[in-house]
Amino acid sequence: MTYKFRIGLRPQWVLEGDAEHPPQALHDMLALLSAIDATGNIAGACRACSLSYRHAWGVLRRFEALFGTPLLITNRRQGTKLSPFAQRLLWANRRIEARLMPTLESQASELQEELEKLLPETMPHLRLHASHGFAVEALMQHMSGRQSGLELRYRTAIEALAALERNECDLAGFQVPSGAFEGPILARYAQWLSPDDYLLIHLAVRNTGLFVMPGNPKHIRGMADLARPDVRFVNRQIGSSTRYLVGLMLEEAGVSISEVQGYETNEFTHMAIAAHIASGMADTGVGVETAAWRFGLDFIPLVLERYFFAIRRESLDTPAMQDLLGIMRGREYLSYVRQLVGYDTTNTGQLQTLHEAFGR
Image (tube, rainbow, N blue to C red; front, side, top):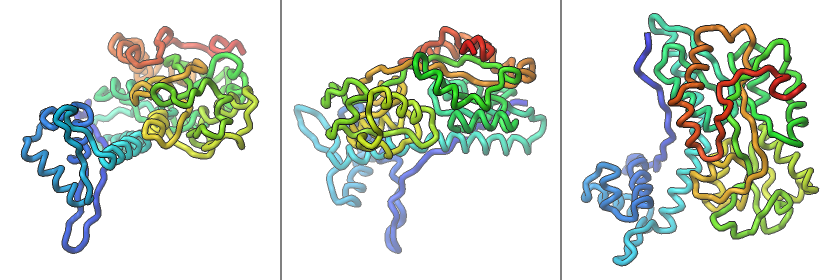
């Protein structure tokens, strides 16, 4: 049986109240601000949010009173735009969502699995441990509602491969840069990738590079510019493969990590890196091109990364794994991933041995 419910978790802002004033949820206000930012006027925002004009103004006035500052600036010739305070609220919300959503998605997947185990006629789902990526997100969406479902835990590549070794998952996602950095990255994974035990499923090739503000006002050209005192960097979390790649690229550029302002500032996803920069908190960071595009940032390509799922050889012929491969090779999934900026699906769904993938 396929169960139609799907667990979802979302972050929510609340203004804490006191004895006289109950807590105030900011969801409607933030959605309205986002719509005003996108449409440039309140009427368009009301249509986008399915709110009456009167109700929308009521929401805005209530929170302007709570905050003690205007949320909108209205100009007859230029329409309506957000005040600096409202812009900061909106960017903070975007950073929070980019930072928390992968964790919440992982928790929701775990909760879904726990609940479905208590229901009749359930089949065990494939367990995927993987670092965050847009093609992985898309795969979860396309597997949703299928009897052979997919349970997701977002992990670093090393955590995922170690979990596969301990038989705590069925697929482990990891990425490997092409070119000079392939060898050092593979050396990190070597103890968990036995050629006799594992096969690889090719997911996609993605373009990884530096995010910079539109127009590149700091004139950043490459990793060597991270040594400049006027450039603020935002890094990925300790243990992530992207952070390790950053260290390799800095070493190649002759830059010490002690020279990089913000090297110890961490974010957990590509989208969080992009949100951090787009909100003005840093000048650059490393991630996949899709995230830069979604936040309107400019992108400086540095390296192509191949993303794989490692699986145990004996799991290949199971019905659940064959169903997953069918989804990955299907027109609907491939069409979706092809639309992701910076992604290449030429070999998506292809099975490879470690020797075929890396020649070793």
